[in-house]
Image (tube, rainbow, N blue to C red):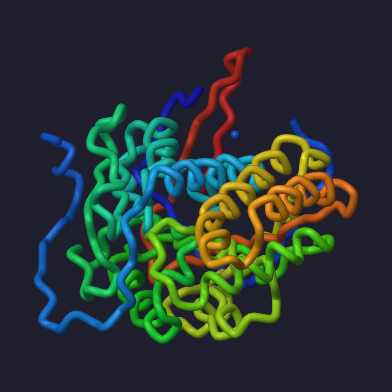
Length: 358
């Protein structure tokens, strides 16, 4: 347990870049006073609405698929985050922003785990945001990332989390969004961005057939805000849609205010051969395919019976080929913090005090 806390925040700067790789391809078997914690100032954007392709509202299938992905990545990354912020969240008073929160699975988990820190989840689709929360330390807001500046004061957040958001906006917009996120980060705050790589590795012929169908369907139609188009794009490495996106490490490396970049990699199995993670990600792909099923059959891209046979073949094929995905999490810190550190005095079962400085 924590016996004493001698400060409320700490940030340790670093100028190095570290890459860590983990693998999950082996078998594995995770209102009222609420508003007061935000340094919030609503500011109306004077810029005209940008001409962004209209997106469809979230469906129940979108939300369920997002939950499956959240559960899989929580297991794959061995937790909800990789940034070195656990002690800060435990100390309390930290303010966290979840970009593109969807139905709030990540922010709700975090709010329950760290009850004396505060969490804000934002998403463009107000209908998907939770209308109530079991935790009083989490708040959800309808905010559109294209409407800059964001409605928060400078230096508001201690930690910003972004997952599977890269292809929800045109590539040309992300640099401005990242600059805006840096503006609302406190000095010494962390930002973490999680995305899938552009390949699905060791896919067999049935999966490749489904890949081609998926790619034929995602060129122009509107997408719902949580539709995992990044996941669709991981099905093939030869699409122009994926190649035009500048990955997070490149963007963060070009931001002079962000330092100490660390990149964590994980390989995740797709199929029951991969235990809990593999089973969840197989379900994830099945749900993606289900979302396109009506479109494919209606447009006579594939016969219904043939589609059923291909899907069943794919489900066994991924185990035969050991199909897997790869994901990365990139973490960086905003420079400039020179304040006090935080000291934790942990008392073990033998009443021995262990002091930790962060």
